Length: 518
Image: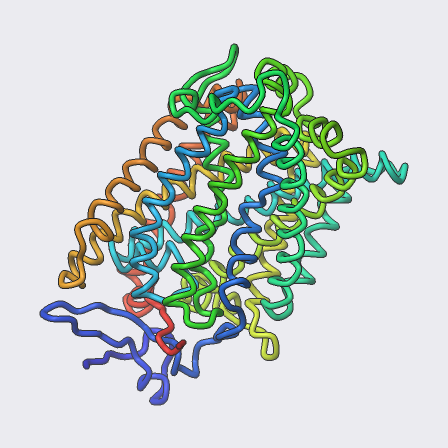
């Protein structure tokens, strides 16, 4: 095994912990195993198990926020009663994508997720550009969720407690509280997010079974909303792609299972299992819940209510089938649920800052972990600052917290994640063909990633082609592809700059992994 001078620092001791070149056949994979290094701050290894990883990642997908925030708009401005079928299609595409994603997770344990996978499969420049893009996506997602959190908090607290203050105060309160909670051990986040996730699922299941056992509304429990052809239908004034977009947006966050690999027990088994469970379980749940909500209203009434009163779409069915108490509880849980979702995205973003900091792409201070809690506290504090700045901009511009802050940032972030997921699918094929040809498999590392990548690419194409349907005439929405592309190119330029001016630092871009976790 050959070594070179340490790209992270100087001195004899540091030089002994240089970049390792793992020889596999006639090829060489460059990687940096941080497990035995004393010059790299490490996360809390073995802190969470399968359930903990699921809580940390699935809460980012936010079942209650996804249903109450996305389904009414998918129905009212997208594919109408075909919204459940849209969730079915997204389930299939994301499950197929996960096959290649999981194959790489079994080989590489890295909290960098997309960043590390693409760097190993497609090279450092694309890896850094992708990590840079994913980091920005998760960064704006927290701000986005603070928008919908503030919207529901202001409405609910004013309704029940008669306290009327500006939405910005709620958003800043949420950011500060998230910053405090994520400062500590990752297990604190897992417990809080676990409670939020369980309560969200329970309240939605109450509504679901209330509709199911009552036989539905005027159209009964017709399977029509589940027909794949309905996913591509459009309501008057809408476009099917809107429904498809909101279906995929509802999953964003599940892929963060990989980001907790360095903090989980036996990540080579836990992370793949958590990923599959997250995708399939969410798919079944989203499809069933959206179908029950439509069945509760009836076909025509569903579209009418979704277009005219989307905020109360789920509240009306819940109150009618379960009662006022359940409806009131749902109103409070959407507040806590959207907060938890923002917290989950905060955790993902802070781990990207941590990765880029420990590799010295960003200032080294961001790569520090707390001496007691082993949390990426520096990256977490920086993420809180970024989220606060974004929220402040929307307050100054006097934009709506729901339609603008939540909606615009959601489109921006989802576009970035879909782009990175497409590249990840390609990277998984390249990685096994180049470095693990003996383990390449016709389905797991070839056809499944190819189909997953094509599926992601198709959604991206539809999103670009119908941006005006998703965001109306908003100039910001129309600029989203160019913003993401420009941001991606900046990441490429940064990688090429490091290659030319600081080759030692360039060596470790996206290559830090942890092979010391059993």
